[in-house]
Length: 185
Image (tube, rainbow, N blue to C red; front, side, top):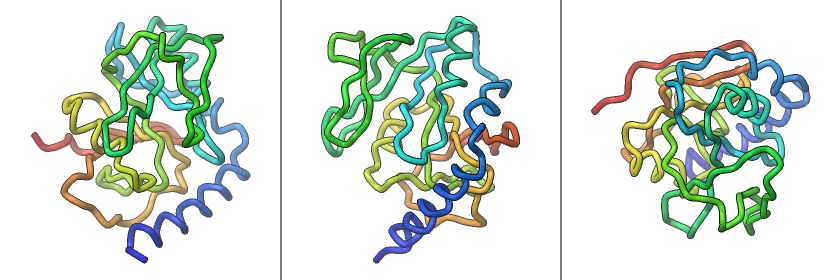
């Protein structure tokens, strides 16, 4: 088992415990003041299992005039695409369990991505699920603002990294917003 695979198992268990210990997480992060430009399109994700829930934050951003988008998995090995979504729009459950907008929803390029994760470190590295979808997407979008959504206890001292891994610009937890050093480039 690789170092990342072993760390993912441990991080999943830790995240599950943190989710049970912080049932008001979604409401707590909804109050976060994120540095998002007026009119920016914001991508968020529909949480699965014990993922930190960004829906209340996304709802607040929509109330402030931001268009919302959800990721769509097109195929394995490809970057995600994003489709507009408004509260009340129907969602389709993808084979991987992700909730996605219908194919008729317009495709957009988000300015800001709210990103799920299993763990993060003090430098802004993120441990994802191993499929590389967000790393490929962040590489394709390049200069977009990437904000991790996590429980504060998901922070770890250091993560094994790969040259394809993309840094987060910041992470929002139940304890507030944490900025990282600007990404290289």
